[in-house]
Length: 153
Image (cartoon, rainbow, N blue to C red; front, side, top):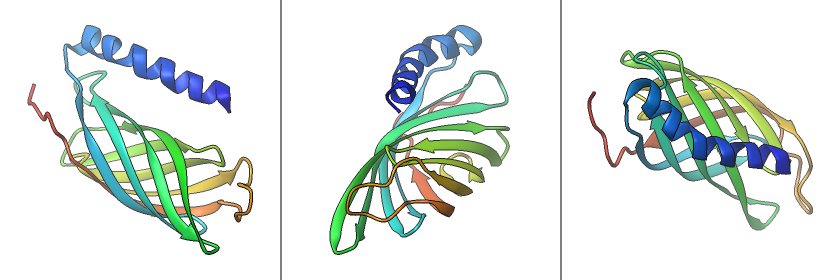
């Protein structure tokens, strides 16, 4: 698990320079809020950065936390994710991977200009959190991504 987090940290540091070298594009970034059901309800909050590796596709990197009230306790679970938007029309189809210390969750979905994302996937239990139930199974999510520095090419 530590290797996976290290990979994402390296990716966050290398990706901006690669994106700018290839396409001259700058990062678009901002906060995100959303809801996810995966063995229970979660409120999601994160920060994200989006770049274009070419003229037709986008990659979004995000890091945040999932908040829930289960088993009579409030729980906060950190999460990192990578989203690959396959095209840049009005509807952006995407593939996504989210990782927490307890789950790995691949998703497929659609985004409306990458501002509103709807995703479906399956969460695989990596390790069950102490005094908590396994977080696994079919998942659905909706998120609102608020760009703070939107710009056109």
